Structure formats: structure tokens, C-alpha cells
Length: 324
Image (cartoon, rainbow, N blue to C red; front, side, top):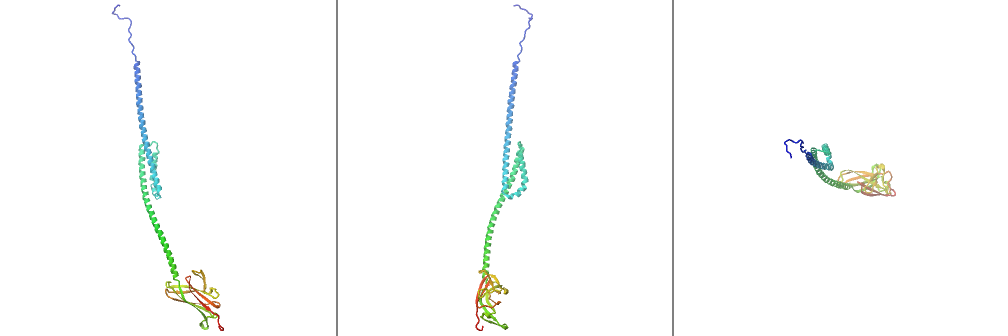
């Protein structure tokens, strides 16, 4: 082997550097960082979504509760206004204000994305509406109490009125019965009945006769009285029945018909006015002349007052003798 101090003519090559592993390492680090960021961002989005969902659920629950409260208020209002007609006039005055509340509350609750401020506004409006409904409920209670008292008073007054009507009917009946009793009791009594056949002679002289063909008139006299009959004028009806059983009646001489209480309508021969003094005897006398001759037989005299027969008498007229 030779040794030389001169450099060799053949050049010496240095080893090349390898960057591939570094690049791979850098890419791996970048990929891991991206994955980490993506995982972090995804977690954050999920948290935001959960928060938003929680907020939406909270708002939805609050809106649902407000709707329930609003429906309850409307139900109370319907119950109050429908339970008492007397409130209709008062409700008319408040309808405008309550209507505005209902409209605004419905407007908020019908929004799909109502804000918290709007929900708070709706809550306040519902509270105000409830206060007004509560006032109406108190008014209904007051009016109901008054109405109950009025019904009680009305029932009491009806009972009193019914009793008064009954009493009045009883009193009226008693009054009518008393008037009837007084009316009947005031009927005159006739007694001392006398029937005198008279023959009128020339010169105005009169002679009592029982011969039928000589009788010119019948003088009928009697006394009447009554302890309770009021003083004043009265009318007495006299019915004369001839021997043939027929009433003696001549319309031209004042005869007619009258009504009795027990026998219906009857003819009368004469109507005689009588001046009555309470509790005193009153003499009555009148003469009956007829347009034809008197017949033989019994003449019956019946006296009536106040629809009742108060007396009767009979007088016989006979056939005359040889020179009668």
C-alpha cells in the first residue's frame, strides 16, 4: 500500500436528507387538529341547539299556560254574563274595554314566535281581565242576593195579597149577606087589613054595602110598619083577584106587573106609594074602581112589598035581595 499526501482525484458524495416522514407527521398533526376542532364545534352546536330547544320549550309551556288562563277567564266571563240578565246593561258599558283586552291577548297568543316581552304583556292583560271578571262576579253575587231577597219579599207580599183577597172576598160576601139580611128585614109588615065595599049615592054620600051590583068601589086599608126600614118613600103593590080567579088589572088605571122573590113576575092591580117612618105605624088607604060591574063572590086582596107578600084579606060580595 502506498502512502500519499495528495488528495484523491475521485470526489466523495454526502448522504441525502429524507423529508417524507416529516411531511407525514405534519399532515397527521393537522388532521388531528381538524378533527379536534370539528368535535369541539359540533359539541358547541349541540349545546346551542339544546339551549335553544330548552328556551323554545319554556316559551311554549308559558304560552300554553297563558292560553289556558285566558280560556279560563273567558269561561268565567261567559258564566258571569250568562247567569244574570241584570248585568247586561252594566256589561254593555264595559264591553269595549273587555273587548280590547280580549283582542290584544288573542293577537299575542296567536303569534307562533311570540317574544318573552309579548308573553309578559299577555300575562299582565289576562290578570287585568281576571280583575274585571272578579268585579262582575261580585256584582252577580250582590244582585243574586238582592234578587233572592226580592223574591222572598214578593212571595211574602203575594201571601199577604192572597190573604187580603180572601179577607176581602169574605168581607164582601158577609157584606152582601148582611145587606140581603137587612134588605129582607126591612120588608114592611101589613096588618089590620080591611076591604070595604062602597056604594056612592047622589050628593057625595057613601054607604057600605055587600051587594055586588051596588058596589061602586072597594076601599082597601091597612097599617104597615118596620123597626129598621129607613125613613122615606116605599111602594106597595096590591093584587085584587076577582071571584072568577082572574087578576083584576086595568092598564089605563095604572095596573102592570112586578117581580116577586118567590113567585116570579106577577100582575098587580094598583101600586100604592107609602110614606115610611122608622119604627112607626103608617096607615095606608086607597080606593079601587073598575070599569065594569063587580061580580058576586069573594074578592081576594094580596099586598106585596120588597118582593114579598106581606098580607092578604078576602071580602065577599053577595047577590042582592028582592028589592036590592
